[in-house]
Image 1 (tube, one colour):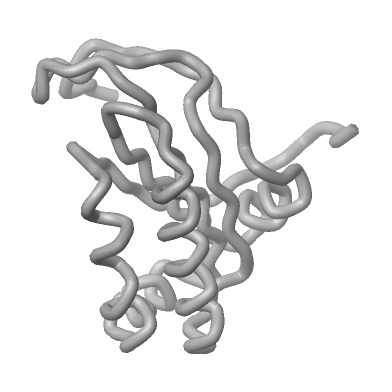
Image 2 (cartoon, helix red, strand yellow; image 1 turned 135 degrees about the vertical axis):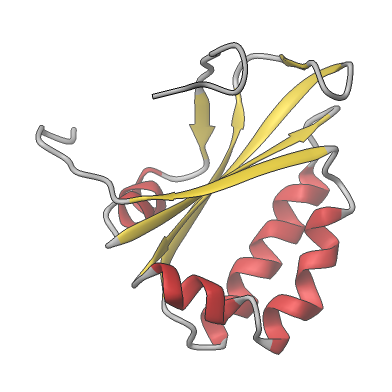
Length: 134
C-alpha cells in the first residue's frame, strides 16, 4: 500500500452507539471525513437534514451516524488546525450511494453541509467484524 501523505490517527465520538453499529454493519459503508475550523451544531443539524432527506428518497441508505474528532487536527493543505466531522453512512451497495446523489432530497440538502467544510475526503469500505460489542 502506498500513502499519499503522512499517516495520522484520531478518535471520533459518534453521536449514537446504535446508529454507529447500523452504519458500520451495512454491506458497504461510506466514510466521509470533513475538516472544519470549529465544531458547530449547525453542521450536525445540516447533516441530519441531509440524512433524513436521503432516507425518505428510498435510495438504499441502511443507516448513518455522525461524530466529531476528539482531537484538533492539522490540515497541511489548508494550513489550519481544527476538528474533523465524520459521517459514516451504511448503504445497500456503492451503486445505491451513487443513485442517492441523483435524488432531489440529496441535491436540495447537500449545500447545507458543504457550506461548513474546508476540505473533505470520502471512500467506501466493507466492514468485517470479528469481536464482541458491549
